[in-house]
Length: 288
Image (cartoon, rainbow, N blue to C red; front, side, top):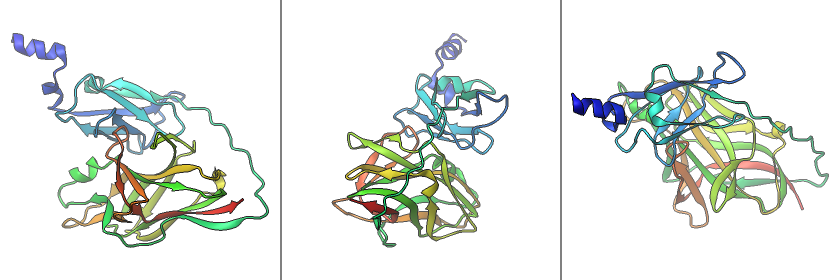
């Protein structure tokens, strides 16, 4: 009895391991409005998930976690929230996110002497892949990928406006796939702050494959000459099961000594990099 009482008071990982960690993410400016597809991550660890469309989330406890680990909840357009992992043991945990004021980007009159240019890789082959496996009667692997992310460095040799983003999907066995497109500034050779305050999502339906385009002209995204950015995709959701080990994947040329692919398993995990070049690119209009 004394041993059991000590474990209860200390918040032992042994107790946490017997349960899933869960909660709901809502806006501070509304009594019940959810923050859909917010990212939930344990700082510096490959643990966490993505909330569903109603702001609800759930992820399993793993042995490398402890009750004192920091959990960070983020969503584009909101201020991050922090709490201790042990707090997620409580029933009906609600996390409130405060909307972050957005500075509207001014409408820019485009330079008259613009030239079309492609930044990135237009090839569709490659021996490396990023994606998610689907196993019939077992959706654990698919759930574990929620929040995973990969991206690549892109540097503009000239000043430019960004017209659109394109990614090549080689395989897609799902009825629906939801991805988030993000642009990071680069600090100390790592992805840093977000460059756009808007939440840009791609929804692929009916096993859509091939090139997928996102029109970025409404966001007035501009790069200066020599500016290095990271273009990344985050896995948010998938609907449907498939037989065997069919997978959703984006191909990449590998190895490529002059290009890097960055990946992380969850939203607060450490970035890892590999010598590769994924099949994604930007169409831009550049000028000197």
